[in-house]
Length: 455
Ligand SMILES: *Cc1c(COP(=O)(O)O)cnc(C)c1O
Image 1 (cartoon, rainbow, N blue to C red):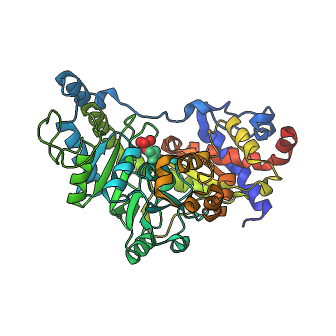
Image 2 (image 1 turned 60 degrees about the horizontal axis):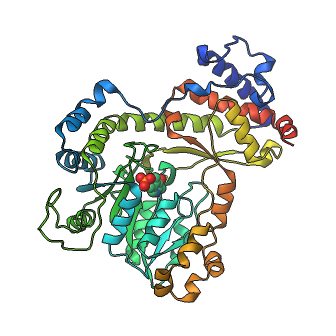
Image 3 (image 1 turned 60 degrees about the vertical axis):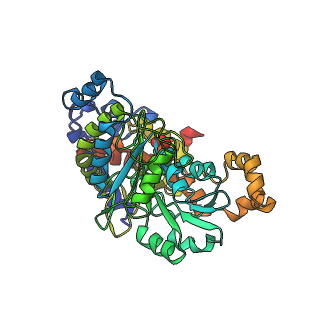
């Protein structure tokens, strides 16, 4: 820990640096005036101009529209050659044998869970620090989510807590590479093999993230991705299942196309369905957008990694700011979000909500992220359904007992402390990272005054 004096010295330099680097974006005093240190919430100039952050999604008419227009003008809009081209490109970007594009990440998960044989009555281990779709995909298949608490340093499912949650009914683990930071797959896979569990990676936030140079989503039995608008590969809506297992991928294809045998697509009536399926097909114009976005993804991922490392190094010395940690074998993260934990005690008790308001006023967009999933009312509602009541013993569906068994205290604490920056901010310049750091430092120095104002 640096001393407070070191910190203040460093800090005033950082503020001066930010103004120099900031150029025309700020009122641009050449010398740091004392008013520059006044938080924006208290009437000082903001550390940055909120309108300068890169917008999302990106779109370049010159390079991105040719194939899309060809698709539009061809009139072939339902699944055909461009979807297949996108699937091949996505599989190849990951080093996976196969990819199946579907309507969204949620249904990629629903499909993978169903076609790996997870059914009503089975238990599936999930982390509580995730987007709701991870859990609802389990419930949609009639299976019971069982929550494994997280490691607050990494935000990921804690492998050390998995085995205690395994019962004779446990069939699968869904590690989620949440925020685009890889989960500890080496340990999770070892546990899964030992107990003969299926592993479905929820990589919906983790495009091109890697462990030991292997892409996440290709380590377990199946990987699921989302191409929703906010995601690092944005198509508006879209998703994919990836795997090296041909029989499984053929079944996923059938399931998402009325149960018709693999290879039958649009207009194949009269061939007969080999299984009960639904319809979750991707369309040609979505695939054309995806191919355009894919061209940028690798370079953008590199920029996010570089800026995240730089920002982390800048803010980690600030007392009360605890940035994420990556597992040692992570060779690349996706940084769908940049997270740190905010510890109010070091900020004179300034609440996280007041810290977020002060940081937002400095021109730095930020949010508090997820609220605990395992205690939300949708679980109780699902447990009341006829289907669940038929499948499960009364005892399993007693919501109070369920909540006790699924208590995740580390996650509760993380949900109180987390602060997020969105991935598009990591596509900005180095000087923007400096601005974020100096805005946080400014709030740190003025925590007492800000707290008085908040009262
Ligand atoms: C976005 C997301 C999903 C769902 O993807 P959609 O394309 O929005 O359906 C699932 N899991 C995680 C972790 C996500 O972030």
